[in-house]
Length: 117
Image (tube, rainbow, N blue to C red; front, side, top):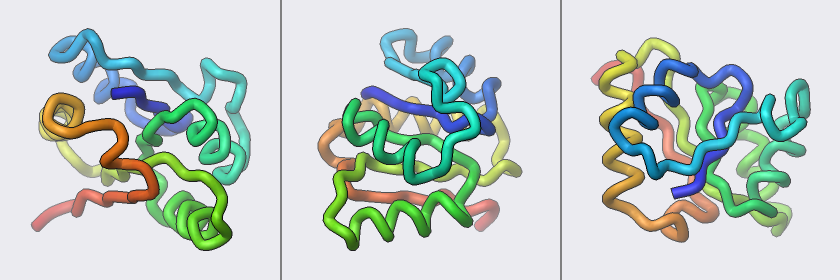
């Protein structure tokens, strides 16, 4: 699984994923020269690299994702986690996603985890 964490994504979640799943290929927006970039630029870059975007920013990122999809522009998957989600649970969910799904299953899809049931 190849992932791109947006600049506000919780580093504790990323570090936890790497501990339980060291083969995860994770880039951070700030490490690839996209810090401060608009959501559209981040989604465009992720699509060219085939990376699933991880974010806590459901409000604007989701709208930009659907606008790109409707416009026929390439989009990788987006997985949205609420900031309030327990770090351990987020790590477990990401680990499950990485080990039980294929990268191609996420192309053109956005999934938003709920804050609480």
